[in-house]
Image 1 (cartoon, helix red, strand yellow):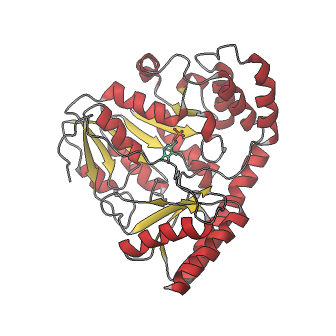
Image 2: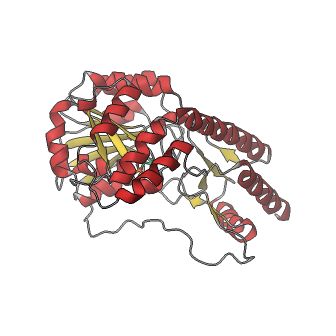
Length: 362
Ligand SMILES: *Cc1c(COP(=O)(O)O)cnc(C)c1O
């Protein structure tokens, strides 16, 4: 399906935090933005404190030490890495490099909302390839390529569905997208799959002229507020991407914190493991209670009661009953669903108890 060209004046609603008061005066817990529920890891806390007296100084524009650390951690040449103010900046920089008004940007039907926002900023046409079972369909994507396709974005695992495309399918996509079309593989949730999967995706990209892999410190590393993302990029693309990126877009404090996070992998990995085990626990209980849940490889679940109005009522109930904010997916085809990330085990218990009250009250 192809949407009509959209104007950049046509606003996409950016979801905000709920600001209305929690009616029972309960603390409000936001599970709607896929954030991690933990404070800084010990080494990140030390780095933040150490940076405090030095906030008058600019960070290095090319994030040299951070790129070296990322190269080392991921077995990549640091000269193929660019950092950004969150990976969202890099997605936008990529769109600005490769798409103009009237060009087509191809995504999967339930692809990440920011891909569409990038397309709209360029007045590019977003083309959505149908999915099978809420999972990217490689043949549908390949079949939707036209001579106007200038860019393909794929988040894997995907947000909001949480579903994962097996590596063999990613490989088939990489092999069949024509080399003149940049293919962006967004691995924002890669750490929740495993290191082997991430390494394999980087390996797929390594010798191609058109494949970009994006990563972020916002999800598994729990540093969303500091805004650090990075991309593994074919070298030829780097001058154009740097030209479109803000010079000081990754601030000095954020660079230091991200470097420190890479030194704290034991803690990061423990948190990822706890998140995955909580996800499976919550999914198990909700399935038993009759809700439908998509198989997630991320830190969040997409869930439905099977009915749009009832899901809407559950979203309202969770806020009014327990102070829990979840995201109601409103994208076409996802009207029946809601999405929420894993909190601490206690917050997840709160959610399960509140869902139980909702279902018992009918
Ligand atoms: C959260 C998310 C990002 C990361 O955004 P940042 O700008 O790095 O915070 C990128 N892609 C997807 C699919 C996401 O869900």
